[in-house]
Image 1 (tube, rainbow, N blue to C red):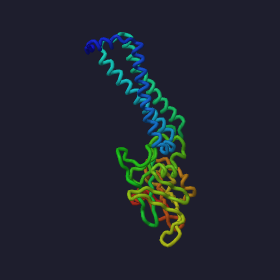
Image 2 (cartoon, rainbow, N blue to C red; image 1 turned 45 degrees about the vertical axis):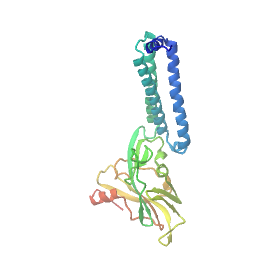
Image 3 (spheres, rainbow, N blue to C red; image 1 turned 30 degrees about the vertical axis):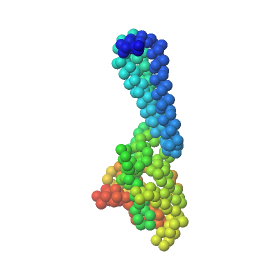
Image 4 (cartoon, rainbow, N blue to C red; image 1 turned 135 degrees about the vertical axis):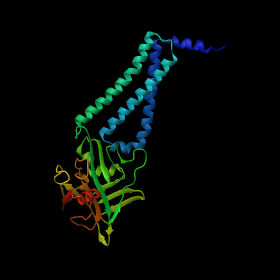
Length: 294
């Protein structure tokens, strides 16, 4: 005859610290193995994105993983402690340590990663920079693909766009080159170099090459920069327009507002030294008398 529920529960109540430790280790191994298996599948699907990810995102991801594992272990042990009411003092200590130690380790790792990242980074902490940009193809403005999903962004948490013709840098910049124009287009799913531009749009992709014809002439990919010469002179700004060489390596100016943040015009047209295109934020500032230049 099978044992009654009370008899089974009595059997569990007699489990000593040795058996409890084995149960705990089994829980830890199962959780870690499950996480590793999931990570392996994700690695194959996201290998390209991970290669592009900066160290800040990697540390943030690993911290989240460890905190999740610690939380799962804690929940399982809490449920076990609720079920097993007749616990010895050894079992109580075991459950307390089993819950506390993973959480302490995960929290310490997360805090240590944050401190290390801030000390080792170019910006020595999180920043929030902006620059406006426009893409023009033979006189036609090209809009970047609209963001979808809960994140409401195109790109990475550090370097992205929100469908607002504005480049956003939000987080810790480990190396200055992490926020150059090349990386921005790569992170939003495009490509930019001195000969070629590939832009994801809502209608598909726009490809532009220096070999293409534009309005009956051979076109050239060019990038023009509106840069504020006196950023600290608020609302009395003076801009200078520059034609950028090696434009894919250009690094955004470190300002939250635009202006004094940059205005970047990416234009495929006949070769010229200046553009008549300008970002809407700069146009508005000029209309208000806050910005002048040439």
